[in-house]
Image 1: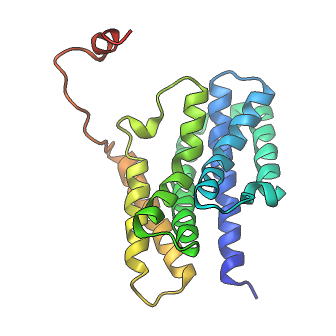
Image 2 (image 1 turned 45 degrees about the vertical axis):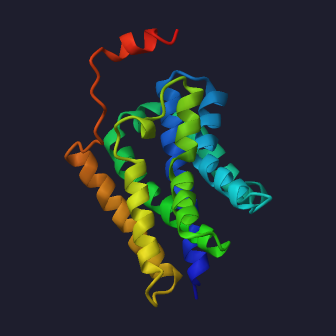
Length: 217
């Protein structure tokens, strides 16, 4: 019989696969070579969880103690590289899957923060780190402003999901129901944001962004 932890581990591997897929697709779109695509897959698939584990002192980090994570990312990266036309041409499907991965990693991060006795704010940050950390590193490596820091409703969906998990901790629900509810909340919020093009507001300036940037050059 499957235990709660086994089911959550399976979801964690699924989330790793999805994020590795999006990272590899980004690498293909950036015209990287095969190594670059695999590096992007590993960065997005494992980067957020590795950063979270280092912050809360869960070392050695899970991705280094369990080779399944890295190997899954490598295989995914290679598959995307050799089957690029199939994956890159289905960006809507990848966005849909990425929304589910966002929910999985948010729930996983908050749950792990709670397991290590972190306070509520720390648990929220663990959820966000897990969900967006790898993508931020990927964007920095590709020399672009991280999407979560611009106007995209991505990290916000993770943050709201983390708050839901904290509220569920006040109930008598076991780990698995809290995990699944949080995952679905983030998933739905993200899909709604994609469908209706929901974005966070951006500050209005008197000058074009390029002119403001030129002041600091």
